Amino acid sequence: LEEKKSLLAKCAATTLSSKLIGGEKEFFASIVVDAVLAIGNDDRLNMIGIKKVPGGNMRDSFLVNGVAFKKTFSYAGFEQQPKKFVNPKILLLNIELELKSEKENAEIRLSDPLQYQSIVDAEWNIIYDKLDKCVKSGAKIVLSRLAIGDLATQYFADRDIFCAGRVTEEDLQRVAAATGGTVQTSVNNIIDEILGSCEVFEERQVGNERFNIFNGCPSGQTATIVLRGGADQFI
Image (cartoon, rainbow, N blue to C red; front, side):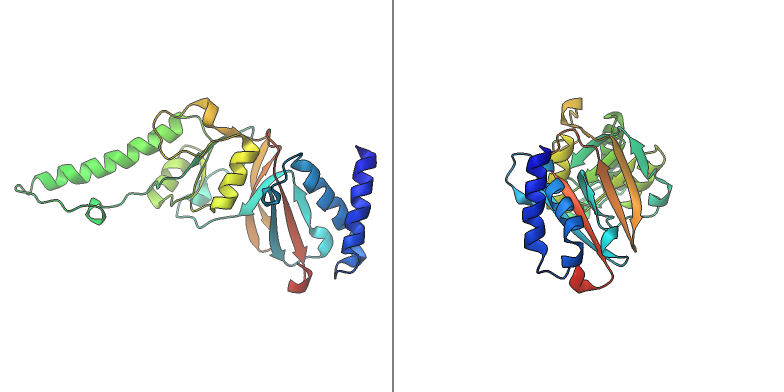
């Protein structure tokens, strides 16, 4: 393996020689080779994510043996959520966890004004039921392709659960591939087999950005290169 890695590193370094980063070709060649080896026999190069963070110097670049993506938009209450977990279970969703008035989705005609309150109560019960099912799954990290609103954000914060909504399709699929999780379109019947896991999850500062980082993923199959540099042309 070391002989193979050395040969690949030489090939990568040769390719990088004519680039702006030629002076650091051995450093970046090592990162590229480690990233390619991390996905094993999988030839889907989109399983290697590349994130660019201006600032710092080129040697601040690093490889994540898993997935890293920029912090998504968050609502009030997010600050109270834990930002690091060891061996967490991860729930991946493609649904909204947000209280939305049914007037956006349907027209309701009432003969009795008193019925209005029962409809409002039903809306709250629906969202709370969804959130409760997420909590009961045992997941400590909840990611969704769609919005996770302020109510859900505070609900999870009160229960020491990290959440992130509006995660890009590409990043969510890479998290699924790396952690062994399966993206769900419903919170009904969540079982352990569909939850992902990793050795360490943390949200940390990289330059002027916050990143969500999943390290030590059991399924491998993906890696993320985080590029740093003081000028745009270097990254």
